[in-house]
Structure formats: C-alpha cells, structure tokens
Image 1 (tube, rainbow, N blue to C red):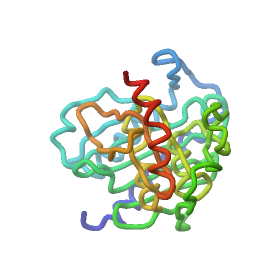
Image 2: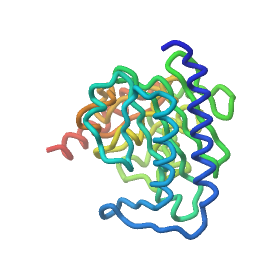
Image 3: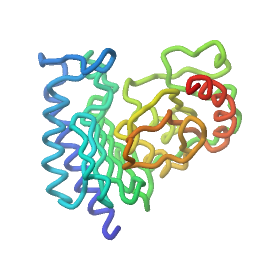
Image 4: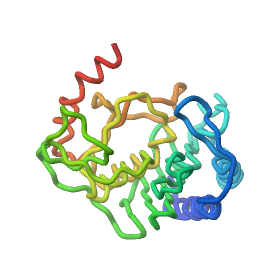
Length: 260
C-alpha cells in the first residue's frame, strides 16, 4: 500500500486519542456488566469503540469494520481492507484498576495485517508496526529474543501448569495483545492460548511480533488469516523462532484433546 508510514502515523494518532479517552475514565465510576459469564464489558469500551469507528472509517471510507463491541456486518467480507479493533483489550484489568490493558487497532489488507498499533497509556507504552517496517515501542525498534531451547522459556502467566513447570513465569497483563508484544520486545519468549480467540484480540499484536522477528501461528502451528467469515482461530502461539516448533509439539496433544 502506498504511503503506509503516513497512514500508520494517522492511525497511531487516532489510537492515542482513544487511549487518552479511556485513560481519563480509568479508576473512576462507570457502568460495567458481563456480556456473558466471564466476558466483562463496560461503558468505556462502547464509548471508545464509537469514537474509533467514526475516526477510522472517516480516514479510510472504503474499509470494512470488525470490532469486539460492534455487531458484525458481513459486508466487510467484500472489502480488501478492514479495520480490526478492540477498543479496550484487557477489560478485566481496566475494570479492576490495573494497568494491563490497551487500545488495539489493526488495518487488514487481503487477509493480513499491514498496520498495527497498541496504545497502553497506563503502562506508558505505544507499540507500532507496519508490514514493510520495523516493530517499535515508544519509537525504539524492538527485536525478538534469541532463545532456542524451550525449557526455561519466559511465559507471561499467573501460574504454570504442572506439565510446564520447566518454563519461567513472568508478568502477565490481562491484555493478550500486550502479552504478545512482550515477545516482540524480548520481555518474554512464548505466548500460547489454547482456546477459541477472536481476530480483534490479536490482529495488531501479531503484526508487531512478526515485524520484530517472532514466529506466529495458531495453536497447531498453522498460519493465521484475518477478515474471515468466522473471525476466530483456535489459539495463538507467538514465540522466538528457535522454540516455535518445540512449543507446537508440546501443545499439539492438548489442542487435539480439547478439540475432540
């Protein structure tokens, strides 16, 4: 896409505005509820979503829209370009007054992310990447680590299961996007989820990780695609290149058991 850097700057400015909107209401009194058991949402999610929809769709009127907080419109499937947005990724941390949340914005073109921005104002972090450039955090280029042995790998988790106690637990923000970004910046070596997840959770983050040199796949090691009719994938696995195959091998039996 022509002038991708300039478009990325415009996206980052909009994401910053959205992040500051959320930040201004963080740790204040606002309505909150559960969309379904275990899936919290709050009025700030919806307000930020509305703002992002207005601003991003004005920036690229021909682009479709896919967001956690907007009813899905199948019209997006006919568009080459689609905004994939999570207005507050890590809502649970946001509601609890913890810092592990961000605004996540990706532009998808022909099924792959070409711009990704994560703005995490409570952590004073802005992560950015384009399909033809570097990954950065606060303007500094980040690069994945070089770990090539799975035992000892740093994983952002609250607690390691018994089968994985040869790994090393590190800080875990609630936002999956921020956990993926940790791999991009050599703050972690591996992030893996073993459940159905949505495109808006990971679209921007996996571009940041890929641009930083990480290996990215679903939980079984298959490539990820975006703007699908069913906007889900079974798990995400992001790691240093040297341990990706070993991580897939370790997890594959669990994935197949879970999928039946």
